[in-house]
Length: 146
Image 1: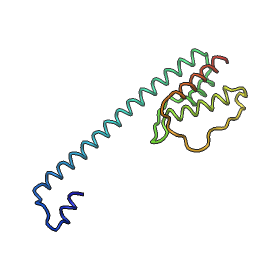
Image 2: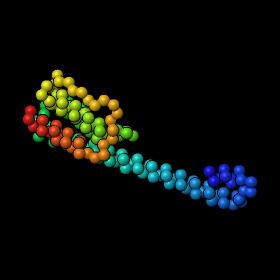
Image 3: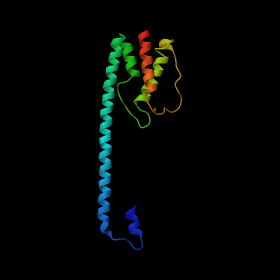
């Protein structure tokens, strides 16, 4: 923007500083790009750690409650160790919704034939993980009663 203003001005300032301006702009772009790449690597590492931790929790739940293969696969399908984060909806929101559905249907009073209504509209990003923790505890409690 500064460059355009200099070139359009009636009495333009000297172009001696143009090289410095371009160098600073280039350095700023490179720094921002490197910062973005670093954040992507950190996000991928956090996703891998979350996936590994989730897999460990699933195995603990499986052996604690002696789940058969069918029930374990059903639980794993809802409480997925595969972490896919979107721009607006992350793993937490997806897992919370899936586990809520599992709790209301298969683990609920109606069994596998039960139907549940899910919230309509867009899923919003959660500010914290308290609701997700509650739903996870609820699933474990229901599995303990089986």
